[in-house]
Image (cartoon, rainbow over the protein chains, first blue to last red):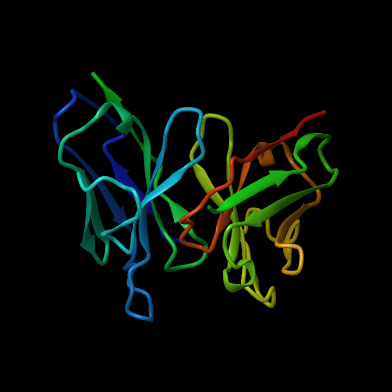
Length: 112
Length: 115
């Protein structure tokens, strides 16, 4: 199984500060079709998860452009250029290249 | 607007069965794979099952293989998860998601396995 290792476990940031979350996979996430099925999901407190980014760097509709995703093969990063209050919650990376699909363990973002 | 509404959760004893349903709307259901993902209380996310758009192929992790069955009724825009031989570790909120890259998630349904 592909192991997704996310760091840090938690972040405590003030409004306006940048954020960066790392996700490393135990094997390449490049699919045989050439695409890399790495997504980022945010779960706000008490809510269902919501996808923010897919295929490493493509923003879902309605996601603010302060969010960005980057990376390749086995190393990926989610960045928030300036944290806002609505960004608090738990961020997960996950891969849909290989079965079984697997998630990172999550990064909790708290607002100072 | 895409909507996914899960039902069928509840309290069940270990070893018993339960069937979840997910009614989908707002998109062409039979064009998409569908999946179930779960989250144990206070824990992270775990993929549970996926099914192709035709229903011809299904996929499971080892943790549920042989006990859970995903199926769909494209005429009714409904996804199902039949859960047999339930264990305490199956206690979780179960989410219905579109595809395997999960652009959309339902509100979730709670399943508690306890005697």
